[in-house]
Image 1 (tube, rainbow, N blue to C red):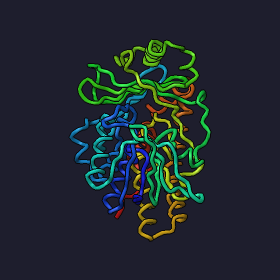
Image 2 (image 1 turned 90 degrees about the vertical axis):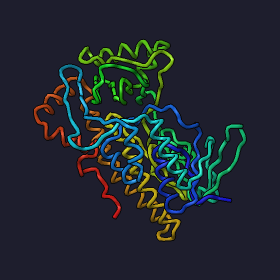
Image 3 (image 1 turned 60 degrees about the vertical axis):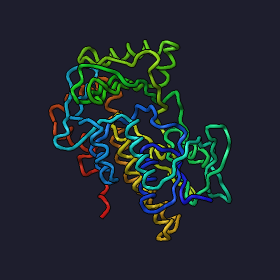
Length: 386
């Protein structure tokens, strides 16, 4: 028997959507290829915007005891001291993704969503409409999971987006990849540190105690030039970026490093007949601004509104999907402009140094930009449901 909704991916977007739909009485199936808890080191910073979405979702009280406070961010250019921007009363948290993902999925399951471990390998399309997902279970057996609505929440490189012909071209050589993982350091103080230099940046996000997330983000062509010396060259690159200004020039031990990328997902639109894309599958921003989890949760809220409208007969699918696309654009466009502008400023060392110097002088402007990225400014907020 078909479900009402089948979702590919049990990350923050997929699980949050499943939770909202199950809470509304929808028969929803979440398909995830990886066993939980899973190792995933991106998205371990929860901005005030993300925390607000978690509270609206009803899981904030479960998340808060498991996380640690994040006090603010220090941004370093190629030389000189940092620009320190505090959250000043707005709650921001740091939490391992394996914990966040498990809490969200368990909340969805206990509310009534069905979770299945399988790999999505295709989309079932009949008469030009998505009607289900083709999956391969852990034993290797192929199967079909049908639903009235299909959702791709399967992240960068989304199988659903590709099979529906929605994915844009990504030139891997020109794109950025992230290298890193968890490190231990006694120099952590609850502040995120960002070290930017031409063509790369290094971020350290404390996770409590001496544990931190450390990620080096740079272009694939530079990684390719390193050959088989990735760990050694990454450490050298980090040392140049940090430049002795903090005791944080650390990288995971050999064999423990994780690579993520390319850090780009382009789609022509976030929907097709019978299907929606949500989270990173619907579009991905440079992670420098730390908006990924916030956007995933907000996107799940928008998608739930559209799906429920269709399933309840309150809206025609074409109209609901176009409304969802407009909500995505309203959410994504200002963030893209902000992310692109910041990316341009840090693309050249001289420009980044001057920008940081000006930001230290004009702190109100810097704080406003920071607030927009973090969700403490009203500029990028969608009002909560009444």
